[in-house]
Image (cartoon, rainbow, N blue to C red; front, side, top):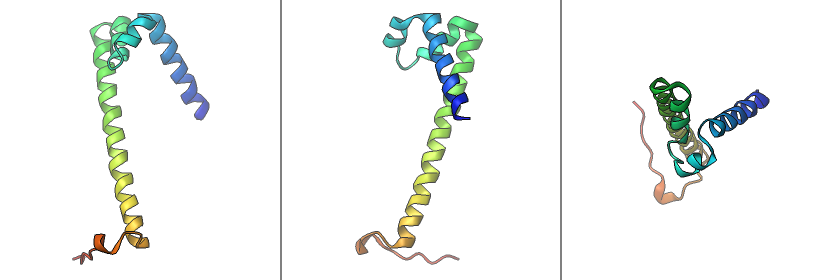
Length: 92
């Protein structure tokens, strides 16, 4: 699995560099892959890369929110917080 991810990363990096050139990738840091998608597949490629970036961002935000919640739960159960930060909430 790990090798497959590395392989995909290398293919995307090489493919985008070959499509639009290194200078364009450096100048357009935030939208470089969208430009490469547009170069490869036209407006459809631009649309697909933009949708993929949106899902990727949403996934990262979701993972951050869940991990933060679990971290706070663990810290609260271990009573690692200072006394001033502790409040007991009664569950219904």
